[in-house]
Length: 278
Image (cartoon, rainbow, N blue to C red; front, top):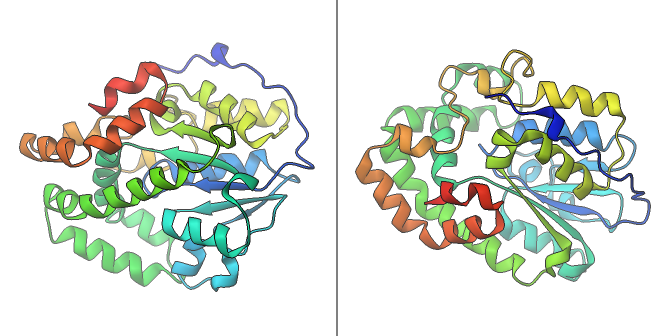
């Protein structure tokens, strides 16, 4: 079923001249490439986009990359520990900044990551980048094990990352945080885009919005951006992938291991998507 663009509600245009910088938590295999493309289109001339901890991890920057400016920037983090450190080291209280948190069911994320790191087209896109060798190693490690083994071996690490994130956000005033789910990205894209525009206090042109509505919605495969990850051979972007790809015993183990994180994610998602976290 295609997303109904008639559900689109054009957000009120707001100025962001005096708005705080935005801390964007955007983990791997969570629609992150699409979200980056969308945000880059929405914030042209308004914010500067910085990768922060990813840049440092792959050798494109130093720890000075962590230094956060109070206004005019969107800082992308994939690790909640370095996110907290960057804020503290920059001398800010947590309530002095705005937060945009993009989350995907970690069980689905891990399954997608298994296939993503082995995708040859994705590897070729990274050729010449500082992290290309790391991607080759990651692909070899994934190819040596089954998807079930890969997911189960990494579940503890990602559970602790999400628990760290939840603990950090508990200290941030609720009005400073906007949560956007992968489920909404895939199943209600017009609503997702509207929420993202408002979270960024962006004011893109109607042409930009109309183009994004047809090029970034996974339920519009014929007009989806060429080269988008959902076009990859092993892609299965809709929520619930772990139930489709893993053995029943693995599904049961993951449900138990992530139970508290999944309950939290269900609480912060839209009511119509909460059953996806069971």
